[in-house]
Length: 305
Length: 255
Image (cartoon, rainbow over all chains, first blue to last red; front, side):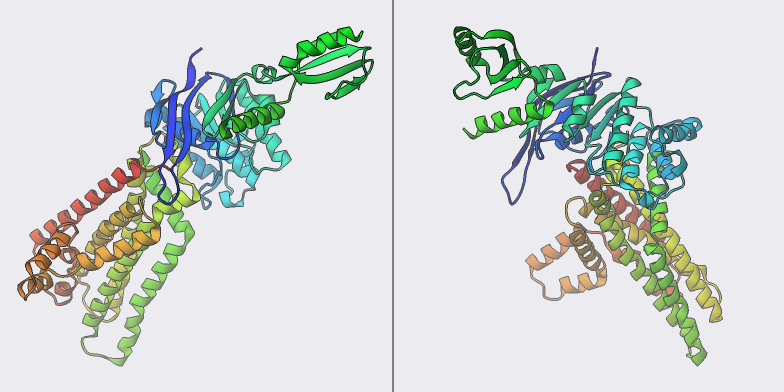
């Protein structure tokens, strides 16, 4: 399967006059396969939006290269393949929904004969078909976000780039957007999106990249990210009810202890000597949220050292 | 329809619906037409005064709108981030700028046409024979607004809208000083260094006085056709130059 997005050694340094220069991205290698949903997560200022802007061509990289379906980013040719939803979606507020969608269809090069159908189709996907005549300034935030997705879809692009699509939306609107993304996934569209909603990312994405201070800390599928835990879970029966320096959890007949991997051998030996019966030993399952905090915290500590 | 035309249409539609432009146009028309009421006092030669004042008003309107619209068009889109989804389309930044500029020119052209008609109407009410020559300075005001707007657009690619407006104002004032003034200054006791500075400054800015034909028209003097063509070509070259500079600067900017 070929890559929809590929970046090699991408670097972005923002030169600033009154403050020190800001290194937004450093040596970013990214490979997003066609048909995947790629979730791009990281704290504020991690470089997510900069990466997206480089992919769109709004920002020029300082070094390295970025390709969309093999075309260098920033060229009109590369933008033929993508639909883009900006982070803070603001549109021409004096235009009607259908009118502005038509403008986007024309700019995207949709053939005149297909324009009306495409506009209708895009509005149906986001459930705004009855709002074609409404002015954009009269839409709610959630509706505007859905319009944003409609304009991104107008040319039926094989790649959608969504910058925090659920940001600032109420739970119902978030659910709407999430369902739309899941439906688009079913149509085989590659989706690259940044988000702070880690539970959504966990549910939707095939691949996840964790970005922190401009560097990609981890990238892989959910299982790889969650299994790559520094802790293991030891489950046993009988034996000591308490262990020095460890919290022992009672789960039915079992007792469970979590501890760093490198200490598990010693604990198992100790439990056997104490007459415990070992029931299981497994990598501790974490949520994406836990993994995210752990990975970014560890990275921060390493950098501070 | 090419992307440039689509974007121009978007600019025109937005501009009309925002109504700010329509309100200023309405006020300008009012100011043009009001003098006809004063003719009730029977002032001799009032038609010439109306022509003079009217054309001056038109020129000021064109310059004011050029400074305002030219310096705010791009920063407005940047500030409201309306340009991000547009630039994510398969269009170049040059096409975006050209679309915006073409829309601006059409809006200015239409506004000046309305004002020109209002002036002709005012003159007709005063009993003056409709003289189409009055429209020559009107058309040249559009061209002047084009040059100034293109400069402000260029300036707004690298500085704030306020500064772009101030720079545009400076360009208009210095570029509008008549050549006779400059010649007089250079020949009347200016040092060599002063002369060189003035010549250098004048060399790198458009001479708006070339486009100022109000006085000869008001006084009924004929303007040679060759001069008119040369003046239009001169304005168009400067406009193009500023647009190229705007594109050069905008292409390098992170958005």
